[in-house]
Amino acid sequence: MPELPDVEKVRRELLAWLAGAILTDVRANDARLVRPITPASFARRIRGARVVDVARRGKWLRIELDGGARVFSHLGMTGDWVARELAAPDEPHERPRFDAVRRGTRRSVRYVDARRFGRLVAARGDIPEWTELGPDPLADGIDARALGAKLTRSARPLKIALMDQTVLAGVGNILATEALFRAKVDPRTPSRAVSPKVLSRVTRALEAEISRELEARTRCGHEEEAPSFAVYGRAGEPCLTCGKALAHVVLAGRGTTYCPRCQR
DNA sequence: CTCTATGTTTAATT
DNA sequence: GAATTAAACATAGA
Image (cartoon, rainbow, N blue to C red; front, side, top):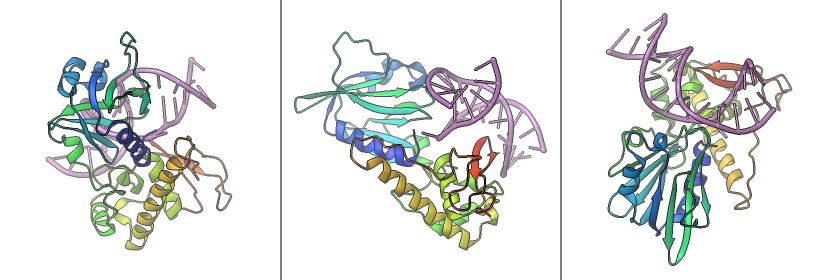
């Protein structure tokens, strides 16, 4: 579920559900998710506070509370936030949840995560995972010159460099795969071999792909629309541009699909 | 049963 | 040391 467009959609939902609300109860019954502190300690730090804002940087969410506390949320591979009616007091709370009340309206906002690769962090300042992120392509735009400077420092494949969260925050396997197809650039190209011309194509492709995916998730409000991809998940199938079978390689442990004819 | 999966951190290797 | 890659994490679905 989570790359920049997915996380941005979750941010907007959380904002709508929680802005101005008071966290009347917090349950975080998942030691793995809140490690290294305990669920009880996590709940103690934020229970009773009022939600002021929900921010996003890359794939990280930051729920800001009055009094200075902050909750950071990373969705890992399968994490998501969902809204439910407030549970009955005796309902088992197998999943982390924030029970919130605002102007008499009660809501329970819950974190679900099948694989539990995600994390919840309660802190008072910003955490290193947040401050060490590179520029966010949606919030900050992509500065082609700054990006180029970072790319020249490494020989690793371009796709892997784009997924480095200190290079650009929020670009994951799908965005990188789709953007490189859109830019007609081989994902294996050594990062430092990228010319200014190619760099500008990649920059525009990333921006276009981010807005396309964000739009697909925002359209029709609540209606879940599975975004379709030109190459991701289509290995062996014909390229939509030239018809040649799409190739699949593994780069730094991540599956990578590309068109051997169009992307050079 | 085997393989793969939208991510990150840590260990191992070059 | 620095750069890069593999392994590990836990679960669902094809």
